Image (cartoon, rainbow, N blue to C red; front, side):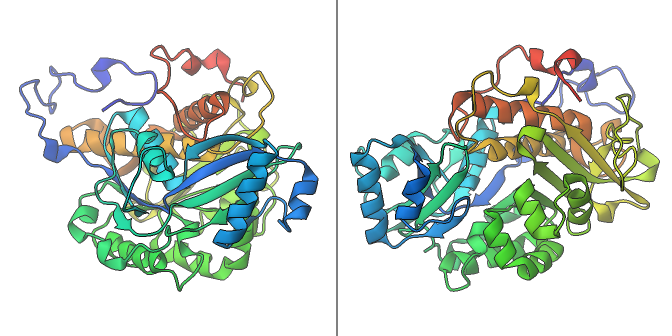
Length: 434
């Protein structure tokens, strides 16, 4: 498994130090964990439209709307005849994240969801399979008789994204498809807020069942929020759900505002950490924030310039610390790190940010799973003198998330087409403006 960041071999496998294992140690496949996720399996259809198009179809700008199949079919037809479609991609926020994770880590992930039973060459289900990384295990998908879901990502000239969803059979995942044994062996369990939109959908019941199982087996649950409108609509539900089940929470600035009521990202991060143990908060042109907890005994002071904030003076003081679950801290201290966009972002104007947040999350999950892998194979390492959640410090994680997000933006694709360059010049300090 690849490890993120600029490392030296001696940090991993020095055989001369006391308490380390020798090269004769046999690395069993039983030591390798995977990420398991549930998704609404669908195809993303990206179209660049004038603002008037939204009014014509009664779509609220920046929000996500469910469309009947007949309306979605006509919308698709109009986009085609007006030549507004720029691309069709395998989609779904969990599918995107698992794909990116497997590309980065060269490790297995497992996707649960529904897919069309009768797949034909060239149809959406075929394209979904073709455009998903081979290391994403799709053998546990549930075949159904209907059509694939479609998510129209409608991008207006100001860069704002508006989503129109045609569910197809994407919400018909039965709760019986949740395998307790498969879930218990996972390193992380990944879900999205979209799965919890409608309590009458089978996928809602399946997700709740899986979350209860994950909690029983001590598998950390990762939740990525959807549109801020959904969060605002079910704010009380999500607050309670996160407190009960979620360890790691990912979102953008608008969703953080909807969840916490705070428009300032640093203040919002403080509110988020009252609900979850760790958070990734993407804030567009202002970069991203990562926040979590570390036991006071294991805090490491930053060597970077201290960052001031009205309510959180020198909020990045301990960004060189590694994160822990709050329950594993005797004396928990909030730790936060912020980073501006990598090299200012891609040189050309960004036309669509679709998938950038999923890419950042995949990098975070890679770091967490790298820690799990390292702890399983080298349990006596000083890296595991405490029960840390992440392998790297928050400052290093923010760099890695930022870099992967940049790659997706540069490719103008919601999924990584390839991994990062072999030589990671991006990790040299002079490239980072803090």
